Image (cartoon, rainbow, N blue to C red; front, top):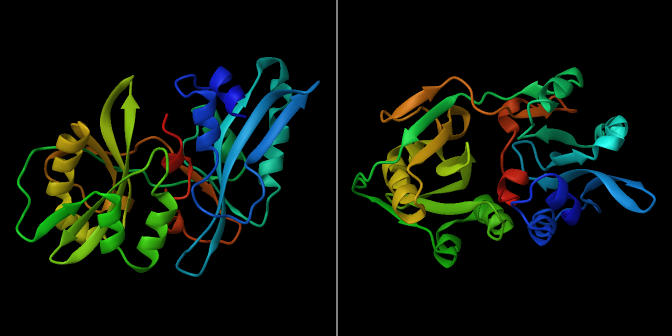
Length: 270
């Protein structure tokens, strides 16, 4: 699968990088990594997936995150066989967190709903942190300050290929922040916040976190979503929507239960 995706989907990742990225850094009971099409012993199509049994408000949630989908042109008529195989997994919630433009209308016809991606583009300013805020970014230090479910989830993602981590400690209370570096129009200028463990603490620590993105990672801008981070900061431009993210619930769980953790957004460093 790694060789196929590197050759036909995104050559900025080597075959080894693709193969490594498709093996999740967390434990899962699911035995495979998605579906493929073969013809005469050759791979001609791939629909990769990330499976998880992540904790949720009502207990563990069995999720199938739809990831890289690529089929050679001569075999496009068989693409829907891969889709049907994905949809046939009725024991799992389905998420598609980075669908391409052509996939979005197909997902809509299949019953996927859109998540709210409204938010803002934040300018990362080198502002001083408020008193009582400190940042922790070394893995050993992060493990030392996190507890309970946050520590377990951090352990699941500590070795992820795309996820980056920082913990803001506000008056002794930790807020775990997960982000990734993203490109827009070929420019690697953006941090995208995937998860904050406490929106209230994040609001207090946000200036220090944005400063960290700028000075430690060289990222002058940050993309935030309201549903992930809460209200936008003053030094930002509102965005009514960002790139689409979609989900298909088999249990009627509300959209706020969908997380960007345990997905290709944390695993694949495209």
